[in-house]
Image 1 (cartoon, rainbow over the protein chains, first blue to last red):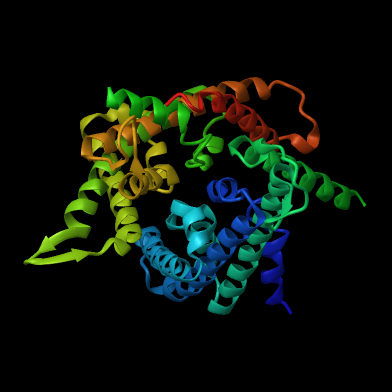
Image 2 (image 1 turned 90 degrees about the vertical axis):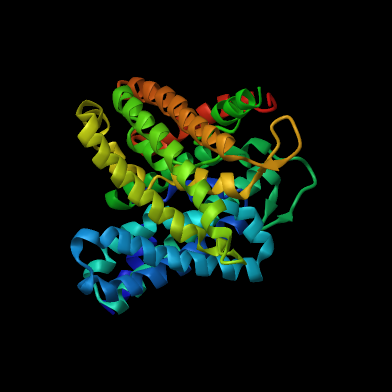
Length: 197
Length: 205
């Protein structure tokens, strides 16, 4: 049960986007629709899970002076694996996400968890933390993607519910900033209300 | 002429932060004061130019080349090689700068190590070797000169955006913002409006 806490923490209490505000580049760039956001989230989750587990195993043998380059090599290796898998099985999504797949390497969420959590915890705990943070990230991305899709394209998970034109600006760059901004306001408001109750 | 098109396109039309979403973390992180924003942008112009120069050469002469009469193509190593080269390069720039120009080192000091994890650097390096561009002519892969100019212009675009944004945030700090909007949310919405303004450049090139 106590181990289970690490998994839950990542979803709400340590939500990488709404609470920790990490990994903003893929968050803003890939959430043009719910499906794209979810694809990016799942790719990052896979990298997080693998790198967290391997780094927690290696942490005791890596000298602390060179730990950051070592972590980056581990992460880059898994990103390359994910890149190959996506190219083979989901070529459409691979094309859409473009350079943001290799850029998972410099996603602060992944390196941040390696440094702040995996290097100090056991393999199992790090794995659970990786899944938890990954799910939190995926949920946030899907949520942002869904809002932008509904407002900008009048569709839900790529199924159009109206043939009219949506407000295109929400699918374009400015919409990403504005939607994320207002979702954060909502998140703060709900948290505040819960604290007061 | 072609270089002019590249510069305008990279600085304004496809602004690295506001339309390509690269380097968002420093954009929000070091934009509280104009002076720090300027320091960060200067460091970024230097590092992005150098990093793209080196990664371009690695891509075209190491990863794809003929070794011992055998043609090889190990572009799948791109991600790992590029990030390591960039990390090493940033360290090297820091050491050299400390030796030859301590004043500049003092000014850029804390920003240099942060740049390694700035996705604009890796992003620019990857864009120039993977995408075709047509600056007023036939689509083609960029050559070395174009790549470096493009990367440095992207960094200048970052500078333009972050300095404008820092100016806004200095004003914002003095105004009365509703509680739920304080901090990141209002910054995001402000950046959204700035991005909306930059969309006006769309279609120039």
